[in-house]
Length: 129
Ligand SMILES: [Zn+2]
Image 1 (tube, rainbow, N blue to C red):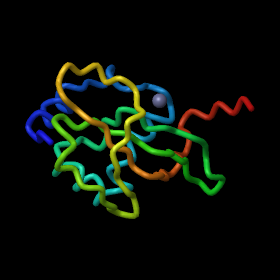
Image 2: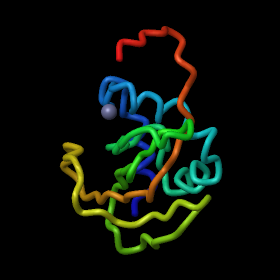
Image 3: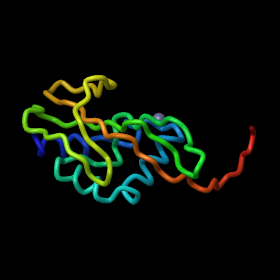
């Protein structure tokens, strides 16, 4: 793993590089506060927890939270020294199936196990169901 290159990659990602759907925006805004230990751990690898390659939104769980099946993160460098682990009840492993981050350098992608984030109280009530 190349931490310096990973940090530079996350710094270079802008808001317009990330998915802008409602479910992903909820993820970017609430993941750090909801999973502080996971955020700290990912930071030790150079990852910004808010800048997920794919948050994998699924659906509300019916209990006030929204389910993300397996948020993915890019790490620059070789996966040789990556160790599978679990933080805050979330396990991390290498995943080969992922969107193309458009990188010319060596990288790999890790995937979290399921993440649940609280549904925000809607500010602009557009109940059109
Ligand atoms: Zn999205």
